[in-house]
Image (cartoon, rainbow, N blue to C red; front, top):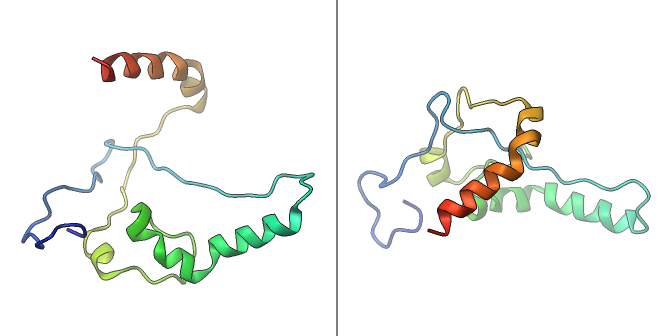
Length: 111
């Protein structure tokens, strides 16, 4: 909808929101303890959390902003969705199988 040269009547793709169809991904930014550039790191975090930056995120990364005061663009309000009941998996199972799954996916992707 957003990148189309001519806006279609119906979106040609869909947001995956049905129960069990996706994982919820939460991204983080932080300051490492002991950093020698703590002031600069704090400035970067402040910049990332700033309303102007957060309002730019939805149409650049197609994710919801962390700053709750950030206004969502109209097209994102119309088409952005949050999964109601995303899939979940025990982190220990992910850690145990991660490398094998990546290898299997890589083999399939390279065919």
